[in-house]
Image 1: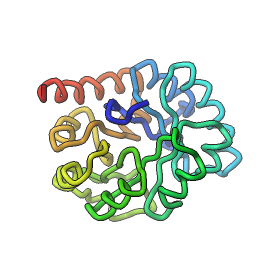
Image 2: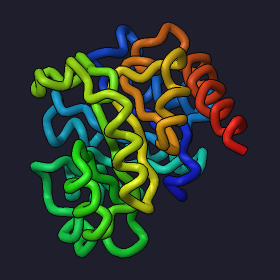
Image 3: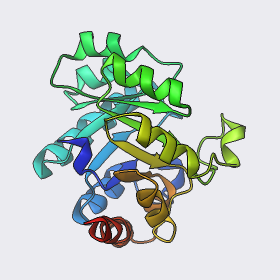
Length: 217
């Protein structure tokens, strides 16, 4: 459950999974060795997200894989998730901590050193930094299509003592530089969700990140 040990982090989005359901993608990713799963599914209503969350909770609990919920502290509580991942426009980290308790895992999306240090001080367990290479997954945030680059990963990793997870356009081919810049792992949507074989894609991504970890030792 320690975010410092996470190398591969799946963020779900069924609209990108072709004919596969989110549950099928998550099950395959677990088979491929994914370290953590985040229920996102922002294009679905609350009831559907809750029902899907219950299904994913069974899969992840059986595999001892942490399950987080994007934004929604109430859904995280309702499905007994391991925690939440918050954006800058969501509940403050310290408020989520009060609601979820000391054992919950709380992550926070950050794009600047100021946001990162504030999130750490408020009690975040890890930070999501990006979109590094840009992404088309967040259609509501057009500026993220261009990417922030690797430099911000390095700057934030140097400024905080909690783990950093890089996200945004990350693939097996470009994951190693993210790790090299100081991220403990990488989070992806399309690389696993949109793959013909999500389990194989997860293994390939994990190998790319773990190889870089090995080079650090």
